[in-house]
Image (tube, rainbow, N blue to C red; front, side):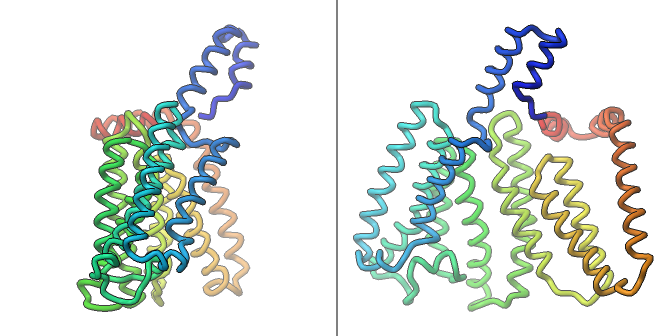
Length: 341
């Protein structure tokens, strides 16, 4: 529930709580949520500035840095990392956990650049590729940069425990699966294989996120970004697969409906959004290709839609009883996770 100052004021007006209790409760709730990402102006500034700085050293890196040579790249990376660590400690001391987490993440994101520079410096870089291609192409020799990034990311996450630090870890795991596949295959891989790798990687990341979600149910939301990248990898791989079978297309639709259900159960919007998109793609396919000349199809969809609305009414009426009975048979850890949502 999104409790606002207006809700508490209305409760005070109806003598449910006193005005002083409403003020105290609002300040308590505000303090409890100050370290959670919110759509406020200062949080937008935090993330905008952080993503620009991180993007400058990753996605938007240009060829100008190659002129510094391997030693220069390592030196500058270490200097930037020292600044990032210093800012992390400064913000942490002031209880500004969001900017502190962003600065700590910036340090982790510098790791692949530093390892690239180190390999260039030592003369062990295997070909003519440059760092800016790290986020664009699949190459087996990126694996050293990825392993180092994972190691630094895990150490930083263990030391500082900021959920934002999970982003470079999740992205690097995604990259690694593609690069390891190339290494095993002995060369470039087909798009079909990439889709399968993305799909199964997504499933593994979703499983990892669920495990993290259960383990951290009483602390911060460390599973958020793993769910994001896992769901995107799984859904992307699944959606781009080609099939001429009507059965497989229907199974795709069912999987997307299942994602919506999982998203609602775990209160993870990414599953609901992606599942809704996939369901719309399937219904659009039916309307355009299968039932394009049928007047009955729109009428049937309307009836289905109204039926779903009626199911929603029934759910609202019996939600407490259904929830109580269904959760009673669940393992304690999963029950506590759902109750914390």
